[in-house]
Image (cartoon, rainbow, N blue to C red):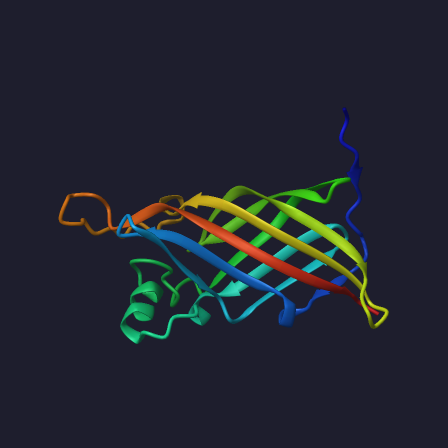
Length: 176
């Protein structure tokens, strides 16, 4: 059985931020995942290339000391590297809507190749606009991007996992 690929549009699509999100999850204390997102981000789909960025200072955390620690040099180093960026190098969409997006992810000035997997859908909305949507996830080792902070639990285990799952749900509207 062969898989048929579907072409990603080469027109220009702008981000619908009302219906989109960029987030992450990391196992904390070896018990459960801590999840958060970014409130300020942008993305586009143009000429078949997916690009995006997130303002790290917009991380959605209401506790000031915790947020400050994540923005410090122990983690994102927001003063020196205020954005996380991504640019696709290849997008493959199967006939069933499954998608694989390869690209370059930059965090803290470190750029590494990543592959995100998920789904892609496109079509008209109720208002006559052409839309495209990617729901994707990938897991990275945060150490590859210089996020090396760690603390030991009383049993000697790491308090914070090295693997972080990044998730995006990006809905685009075709530019007029």
